[in-house]
Every structure is written in C-alpha cells, then in structure tokens.
Image 1 (cartoon, protein in one colour):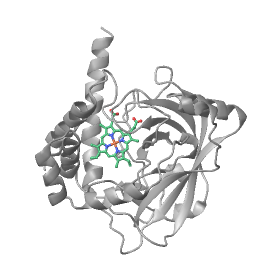
Image 2 (spheres, rainbow, N blue to C red):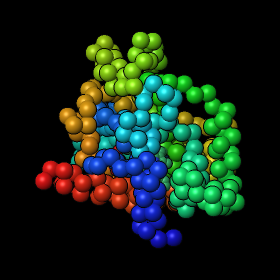
Image 3 (spheres, rainbow, N blue to C red):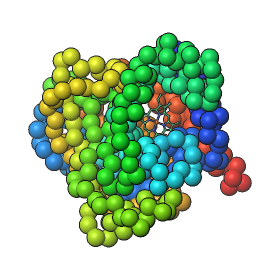
Image 4 (tube, helix red, strand yellow):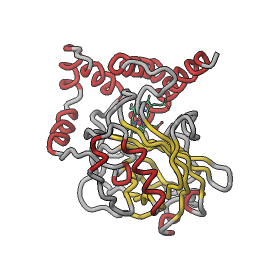
Length: 305
Ligand code: HEM
C-alpha cells in the first residue's frame, strides 16, 4: 500500500468525523504538556537493550491527551486517553513514544483503520467491508463491551505501547517487546471535581504540589508464540516483565505555556537499543502523524500572520 496516500485519507477521515480545530492535532486534540525525568530502574533491561535511556537519567517532555479529534472532550465522562513522550538522553539521542489506554488496537492494518473511521462517519459500505475484511474488529468490540468504563485521573491511567518493538543489545541480539506505563501509586478520585469538564489538568497540578506523580515503564518480553506484527492481538498468559525505568513528572503546563505543542510524537523516532517491528499499524503512524503535523503547522503560520 502507498502509505503516504493512505495517511492523507486517514487524516481526512479524522477531519470529517471531528471537524478541524485550527492549529491543533487531528487526533488526541485536547491535551496539555508536562516535564519530568526518565530514570533507569532494573538493570536487567540492559541485557536486552543498550539504549542510553536505560543507562542514566534523561529529560522528558510529554503530553497527556484525550483520544479523538474533539478539542473540548469532557474530562468528566469516561474515555480513552494518550501519553506522548519525548525523552532526551544525556548523549544527545532522542526517543519518542505515543501510547494510549487501549489494551489493543481495533484493527490490524491501516487500511482497516481507514475503513473503521469511515464506518464511524456512517458510511454503510465501509461498515460492511470492515467486518468482512477485518473480523478482528469483533474481538475488539467484545473486549470493549466487557470493560468497565470509569471517569479516571491521568495519575491512575495505564498507557500501552500497543505496537511491538524490538530491543537490541550490545551483541545485536533482538528481543520483541511491548510496554506499558503503569502508575507507581493510586490517587484517589476527588468527588468535588467530577462536575467539571476540565478537572484533569487542575488535579494533576495540585497533586504535584504534595507528592510525586510517576509511572513505571514495564517492559513485557514476548513469548515465542506471541504475534509481533499484529496490534489487534493481545499477548495472553504469563510473561516475563521488567520495570525498566520510571517517569517522574515535575510540572504540567497548558499547551500555550508548555513545550509539547510543537512536538510530533512520532513513535518511530527511537534511540539505539530499540528497533521498530514490522507491524503495519506502527509503520503507518509516522506518515499519518506527519500529515497532521504539517496541517496544524501551516494553520498556525496562517493564524500568526
Ligand atoms: C494507523 C494508526 C494510527 C493513526 C493513523 C494515528 C493518528 C494520529 C494522529 C494524526 C495524531 C496527531 C499527531 C500530531 O499532529 O502531532 C496522533 C496522536 C497520538 N496517537 Fe495515534 N494514530 C495511530 C495509532 C496509534 C496507536 C496504536 C497509539 C497508541 C499506542 C496511538 C497513540 C497516540 C497518542 C498518545 C497521540 C497523542 C500524542 C500527542 O499528545 O501529541 N496512536 N495519532
């Protein structure tokens, strides 16, 4: 498939389904920035990866967001969310990650994702094609129907890589992995803020005054039978996991006052010690993010004229 053309079509469907917020991301539109540090935890990870991220503390700039293109998505309704991360190692290497709260992706390919977005806009033919060509969507729908949906604080959310990657070590050995960012502690959901459509930013800001807000990067090593190149398939059963690092937040800022708005959290920007898998969803993300990035930057240039 021609990924660049497909990416343009996918971004067009986001614009059709959500409208355009000029100068903003086409997906994960509502969000805010944070700054912090990324700290190695369990040195076992160094047997699998020689990334500088696992050697010493790095600087992190990130973004917490609502999934979807609605720039006024309410905080006080259950939804799916994302975390974008740019991690700058001391040796100058940079890694980006974009993770979300889904357990796995609804479809296995970008062609499927295009159909899914078209189906969401009410396209009857796309709806039909989606279930014929991407029966995996039924598994996803069944999974989502079983999941309890709660209003949740960013502090308590788990963010998943969804796509698989390879860790590579000094000897060039490749190990397939996925990872999750898991909160190091559980924060109580304050009752009084539930009435506000914008409480998530204020809440995390207040929490940072009284204690750390942190996530462990938990790396899951693939078992031999795990599907590597299929983001719509969950890795089942017992797995070896390693707490490779911990992300410590230091402060949060609005997009206007923070450092994240100008960043494209392209998940294929990797430090040495990481390599992409051949997952077609992962491969489609770079060109899609760059279409969205290009459009919002050119709108910004026009807004500022
Ligand atoms: C083909 C599949 C996908 C497409 C087309 C897509 C599309 C996009 C687009 C257009 C953006 C905005 C980029 C920008 O303007 O900077 C975005 C952001 C994001 N995506 Fe995806 N995405 C895909 C898969 C995924 C997956 C599998 C995950 C989770 C693991 C994910 C997580 C995120 C997150 C967290 C952001 C927000 C980053 C930020 O705060 O800027 N996406 N996505």
